[in-house]
Amino acid sequence: MSETLQNISESLLPMAASWGLQVIGAIVLLIIGRSVARMLRRMSMRGLEKAGTDATLIPFFGGLVYYLTIAVVLIAVLGLFGIETTSLVAVLGAAGLAVGLALQGTLSNFSSGVMLMVFRPFRIGQFVEVAGVKGTVREVGIFTTLLATPDNVQITVPNSAIYGAIIINYSAEDTRRNDLVIGVSYGDDLKTAEETMRRVLSADPRVLKEPEAQIAVSELGDSSVNFVVRPWCRSEDYWPLRFDLTRRIKEELEASGCSIPFPQRDIHVINGAAND
Image (cartoon, rainbow, N blue to C red; front, side, top):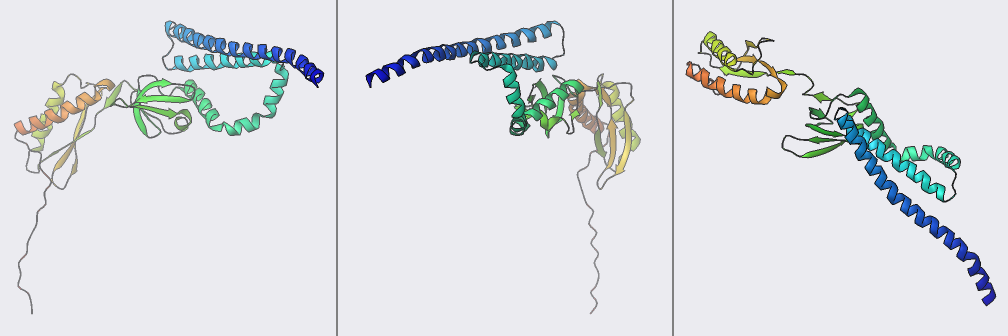
């Protein structure tokens, strides 16, 4: 019995030592490989920044470098255990369908990220509306896109929810048109109201001369005569100009004798004798 145990131990010890060294080597290789992948990602991103590459592309290509390096490290680790890469490719090919079905969401995000990089419907720093949310684009990654809302809340949107859906880019053009609706009383002089609003627009340097601003009576409302006021401005001036014009037009209309009426209704009471 003792001789049997001794024979078994003598046969297992070399095997354990060999596998132990391989496992240790694999762990060391994984640790070093991960560090190298991170270093290469940082170096590639810095190189792209120095080369003046679009900020939208930098994190995407940095992520590609990282994951490709990790893939090479994993193949090297498998090689330590005597697994040939040709056999590995055959196994991966056979299991490709199952893996694709299991990771279809992730692969969809990846392919959508590639398409976003190719067609580039938006860039870093632009204000967009995608997948039902609005925000400023902070990063377009391999799998997700990061947005920051105007109140500085971070939103992570899967790329598959963006590509193929409606994308509204509010910052794509250099200029935008403000659409304001201003109501005046039916008793006010419409010419005076129009001249007052046009004077307010002319006094603001943010209002562009071309295209020319439009001021016109749009409808006869229940309680007011409504004007549309449509000045053009640079995209970055859109909201500040809108807020300032709303206030200035209201103040100048009142100063010129016009009024912005409250909603009101006329009630007619008819008195009549009841017939018996």
